[in-house]
Length: 253
Image (cartoon, rainbow, N blue to C red; front, side):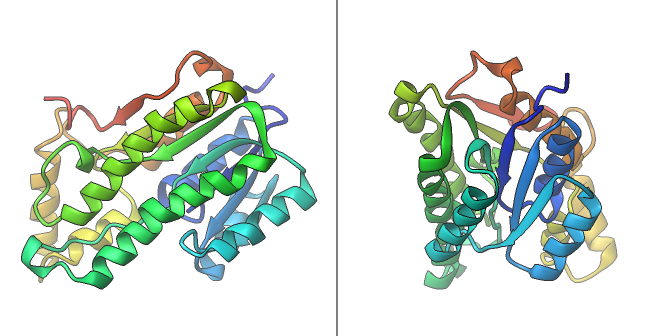
Protein backbone atom coordinates (compact mmCIF):
# COMPACT_ATOMS: atom_id res chain seq x y z
CA UNK A 1 0.00 0.00 0.00
CA UNK A 2 1.30 3.44 -0.89
CA UNK A 3 2.07 5.58 2.15
CA UNK A 4 -0.32 8.43 1.23
CA UNK A 5 -3.05 6.19 -0.18
CA UNK A 6 -6.45 7.91 -0.03
CA UNK A 7 -5.11 11.12 1.48
CA UNK A 8 -6.30 14.58 0.35
CA UNK A 9 -3.49 17.13 0.13
CA UNK A 10 -3.33 20.86 -0.57
CA UNK A 11 -0.07 22.37 -1.81
CA UNK A 12 0.25 26.12 -2.24
CA UNK A 13 2.79 27.25 -4.78
CA UNK A 14 2.39 23.87 -6.42
CA UNK A 15 2.83 25.04 -10.00
CA UNK A 16 6.66 25.00 -10.03
CA UNK A 17 9.85 24.09 -8.19
CA UNK A 18 9.56 22.40 -4.81
CA UNK A 19 5.76 22.59 -4.78
CA UNK A 20 5.39 20.88 -8.15
CA UNK A 21 7.93 18.19 -7.29
CA UNK A 22 6.07 17.53 -4.04
CA UNK A 23 2.71 17.34 -5.80
CA UNK A 24 4.13 14.75 -8.20
CA UNK A 25 5.55 12.70 -5.33
CA UNK A 26 2.34 12.91 -3.27
CA UNK A 27 0.30 11.66 -6.24
CA UNK A 28 2.81 8.86 -6.83
CA UNK A 29 2.33 7.89 -3.17
CA UNK A 30 -1.46 7.66 -3.59
CA UNK A 31 -2.75 11.10 -2.61
CA UNK A 32 -5.21 13.36 -4.41
CA UNK A 33 -3.68 16.82 -4.61
CA UNK A 34 -4.99 20.36 -4.96
CA UNK A 35 -2.29 22.76 -6.15
CA UNK A 36 -2.32 26.55 -6.32
CA UNK A 37 -0.40 29.14 -8.25
CA UNK A 38 -0.86 32.78 -9.16
CA UNK A 39 -0.41 32.34 -12.93
CA UNK A 40 -3.09 30.28 -14.64
CA UNK A 41 -0.91 29.22 -17.58
CA UNK A 42 1.79 27.79 -15.31
CA UNK A 43 -0.85 26.13 -13.15
CA UNK A 44 -2.44 24.47 -16.18
CA UNK A 45 0.98 23.24 -17.33
CA UNK A 46 1.66 21.78 -13.88
CA UNK A 47 -1.66 19.95 -13.86
CA UNK A 48 -0.84 18.43 -17.25
CA UNK A 49 2.61 17.42 -16.01
CA UNK A 50 1.24 15.72 -12.88
CA UNK A 51 -1.30 13.98 -15.07
CA UNK A 52 -3.83 12.48 -12.65
CA UNK A 53 -5.43 12.91 -9.23
CA UNK A 54 -4.87 16.67 -9.24
CA UNK A 55 -6.90 19.86 -9.34
CA UNK A 56 -5.37 23.27 -9.99
CA UNK A 57 -6.94 26.31 -8.33
CA UNK A 58 -5.62 29.75 -9.32
CA UNK A 59 -4.89 31.53 -6.06
CA UNK A 60 -2.72 34.21 -4.47
CA UNK A 61 -2.19 33.26 -0.83
CA UNK A 62 -1.92 36.91 0.21
CA UNK A 63 -5.52 37.41 -0.98
CA UNK A 64 -7.88 36.01 1.64
CA UNK A 65 -10.77 35.80 -0.83
CA UNK A 66 -8.62 33.55 -3.02
CA UNK A 67 -7.98 31.28 -0.03
CA UNK A 68 -11.71 31.09 0.67
CA UNK A 69 -12.30 30.12 -2.97
CA UNK A 70 -9.57 27.46 -2.76
CA UNK A 71 -11.05 25.78 0.27
CA UNK A 72 -14.60 26.02 -1.11
CA UNK A 73 -13.33 24.02 -4.10
CA UNK A 74 -11.67 21.44 -1.84
CA UNK A 75 -14.83 21.13 0.26
CA UNK A 76 -17.03 20.69 -2.80
CA UNK A 77 -14.82 18.07 -4.42
CA UNK A 78 -13.41 16.08 -1.49
CA UNK A 79 -14.89 17.43 1.75
CA UNK A 80 -11.73 17.22 3.82
CA UNK A 81 -7.97 17.83 4.04
CA UNK A 82 -5.44 15.36 5.46
CA UNK A 83 -2.22 17.12 4.44
CA UNK A 84 -1.38 20.78 3.91
CA UNK A 85 1.95 21.86 2.44
CA UNK A 86 2.03 25.64 2.92
CA UNK A 87 4.80 26.24 0.44
CA UNK A 88 4.00 29.41 -1.51
CA UNK A 89 6.56 32.15 -0.97
CA UNK A 90 8.68 34.85 -2.56
CA UNK A 91 12.27 35.93 -2.10
CA UNK A 92 13.77 39.12 -3.49
CA UNK A 93 17.13 40.61 -2.63
CA UNK A 94 17.37 44.10 -1.16
CA UNK A 95 20.17 45.48 1.00
CA UNK A 96 19.21 47.23 4.21
CA UNK A 97 19.58 50.70 2.70
CA UNK A 98 17.48 49.71 -0.34
CA UNK A 99 14.49 48.11 1.44
CA UNK A 100 11.21 49.80 0.55
CA UNK A 101 7.77 49.56 2.12
CA UNK A 102 6.51 47.74 -0.97
CA UNK A 103 9.32 45.18 -0.73
CA UNK A 104 8.53 44.55 2.94
CA UNK A 105 4.77 44.37 2.43
CA UNK A 106 5.01 41.99 -0.53
CA UNK A 107 7.40 39.61 1.26
CA UNK A 108 5.53 39.52 4.55
CA UNK A 109 2.15 39.58 2.81
CA UNK A 110 2.90 36.32 1.02
CA UNK A 111 5.41 34.54 3.26
CA UNK A 112 3.89 35.36 6.67
CA UNK A 113 0.33 36.68 6.35
CA UNK A 114 -0.44 34.40 3.42
CA UNK A 115 0.97 31.31 5.11
CA UNK A 116 -0.81 32.03 8.38
CA UNK A 117 -4.22 32.36 6.76
CA UNK A 118 -3.52 29.41 4.44
CA UNK A 119 -3.30 27.28 7.58
CA UNK A 120 -6.05 28.98 9.58
CA UNK A 121 -8.63 28.75 6.80
CA UNK A 122 -7.82 25.07 6.19
CA UNK A 123 -8.64 24.04 9.76
CA UNK A 124 -12.43 23.58 9.38
CA UNK A 125 -11.75 20.94 6.71
CA UNK A 126 -8.69 19.45 8.39
CA UNK A 127 -8.82 15.91 9.71
CA UNK A 128 -7.68 15.32 13.27
CA UNK A 129 -4.32 13.60 13.20
CA UNK A 130 -3.36 15.23 9.89
CA UNK A 131 -0.07 16.84 8.90
CA UNK A 132 0.79 20.47 8.21
CA UNK A 133 4.14 21.21 6.58
CA UNK A 134 5.55 24.73 6.29
CA UNK A 135 8.33 25.86 3.95
CA UNK A 136 10.90 27.88 5.87
CA UNK A 137 14.53 28.39 4.79
CA UNK A 138 18.13 28.17 5.91
CA UNK A 139 18.11 31.95 5.42
CA UNK A 140 16.34 32.17 8.78
CA UNK A 141 19.41 30.68 10.47
CA UNK A 142 22.29 32.22 8.51
CA UNK A 143 23.08 35.83 7.69
CA UNK A 144 22.61 36.24 3.93
CA UNK A 145 23.61 39.59 2.48
CA UNK A 146 20.65 41.41 0.96
CA UNK A 147 18.07 39.02 2.39
CA UNK A 148 16.99 40.96 5.50
CA UNK A 149 13.25 40.85 4.91
CA UNK A 150 13.10 37.37 3.40
CA UNK A 151 15.16 35.90 6.25
CA UNK A 152 12.93 37.53 8.85
CA UNK A 153 9.80 36.18 7.15
CA UNK A 154 11.20 32.66 7.20
CA UNK A 155 12.15 32.99 10.87
CA UNK A 156 8.48 33.75 11.55
CA UNK A 157 7.55 30.50 9.82
CA UNK A 158 9.90 28.55 12.08
CA UNK A 159 8.12 30.13 15.03
CA UNK A 160 4.73 29.16 13.61
CA UNK A 161 5.74 25.49 13.57
CA UNK A 162 6.40 25.65 17.30
CA UNK A 163 3.33 27.62 18.39
CA UNK A 164 0.89 25.78 16.14
CA UNK A 165 2.14 22.43 17.41
CA UNK A 166 0.88 23.56 20.81
CA UNK A 167 -2.27 25.25 19.48
CA UNK A 168 -3.34 22.10 17.61
CA UNK A 169 -2.22 19.44 20.05
CA UNK A 170 -5.79 18.56 21.10
CA UNK A 171 -6.53 17.65 17.49
CA UNK A 172 -3.26 15.70 17.15
CA UNK A 173 -2.38 17.68 14.04
CA UNK A 174 1.37 17.63 13.51
CA UNK A 175 3.04 20.84 12.33
CA UNK A 176 6.60 20.81 11.03
CA UNK A 177 8.83 23.09 8.97
CA UNK A 178 11.19 22.21 6.15
CA UNK A 179 14.16 24.53 5.62
CA UNK A 180 15.69 24.04 2.19
CA UNK A 181 19.17 25.26 1.43
CA UNK A 182 20.34 26.05 -2.12
CA UNK A 183 17.89 24.23 -4.40
CA UNK A 184 18.20 24.26 -8.18
CA UNK A 185 14.84 25.71 -9.26
CA UNK A 186 13.87 28.18 -11.93
CA UNK A 187 13.12 30.74 -9.20
CA UNK A 188 16.60 30.38 -7.70
CA UNK A 189 18.20 30.72 -11.11
CA UNK A 190 16.23 33.89 -11.79
CA UNK A 191 17.22 35.30 -8.39
CA UNK A 192 20.89 34.66 -9.09
CA UNK A 193 20.71 36.17 -12.57
CA UNK A 194 19.00 39.26 -11.17
CA UNK A 195 22.04 40.01 -9.03
CA UNK A 196 24.56 40.14 -11.87
CA UNK A 197 25.09 41.62 -15.30
CA UNK A 198 26.27 38.56 -17.25
CA UNK A 199 25.88 34.79 -17.52
CA UNK A 200 29.54 34.40 -16.50
CA UNK A 201 28.93 36.36 -13.29
CA UNK A 202 25.82 34.29 -12.62
CA UNK A 203 27.80 31.06 -12.92
CA UNK A 204 30.48 32.41 -10.59
CA UNK A 205 27.83 33.38 -8.05
CA UNK A 206 26.39 29.88 -8.25
CA UNK A 207 29.85 28.37 -7.68
CA UNK A 208 30.32 30.61 -4.65
CA UNK A 209 26.96 29.46 -3.30
CA UNK A 210 27.75 25.79 -3.85
CA UNK A 211 31.07 26.24 -2.06
CA UNK A 212 29.13 26.89 1.17
CA UNK A 213 27.45 23.47 0.95
CA UNK A 214 29.39 20.58 2.51
CA UNK A 215 27.91 18.13 -0.01
CA UNK A 216 29.32 20.34 -2.78
CA UNK A 217 26.20 20.83 -4.88
CA UNK A 218 22.75 22.37 -5.00
CA UNK A 219 19.81 20.19 -4.10
CA UNK A 220 16.98 19.16 -6.39
CA UNK A 221 13.30 19.94 -5.83
CA UNK A 222 12.58 16.21 -5.54
CA UNK A 223 15.04 15.89 -2.66
CA UNK A 224 12.86 18.35 -0.74
CA UNK A 225 9.72 16.58 -1.93
CA UNK A 226 10.95 13.31 -0.44
CA UNK A 227 11.26 14.98 2.95
CA UNK A 228 7.80 16.55 2.60
CA UNK A 229 6.41 13.09 1.79
CA UNK A 230 8.01 11.71 4.96
CA UNK A 231 6.48 14.48 7.10
CA UNK A 232 3.10 14.01 5.41
CA UNK A 233 2.99 10.27 6.09
CA UNK A 234 2.61 8.06 9.15
CA UNK A 235 6.36 7.38 8.91
CA UNK A 236 6.73 10.63 10.89
CA UNK A 237 3.87 9.97 13.33
CA UNK A 238 5.97 11.02 16.35
CA UNK A 239 7.56 14.06 14.70
CA UNK A 240 6.10 17.46 15.59
CA UNK A 241 7.28 21.04 15.90
CA UNK A 242 10.63 20.46 14.19
CA UNK A 243 12.63 22.31 11.59
CA UNK A 244 14.05 19.72 9.21
CA UNK A 245 16.92 21.09 7.15
CA UNK A 246 17.30 19.91 3.55
CA UNK A 247 20.46 21.83 2.82
CA UNK A 248 23.40 19.53 2.21
CA UNK A 249 24.73 20.66 5.59
CA UNK A 250 24.95 24.35 4.64
CA UNK A 251 23.29 25.68 7.80
CA UNK A 252 24.78 23.05 10.09
CA UNK A 253 28.48 23.93 10.17
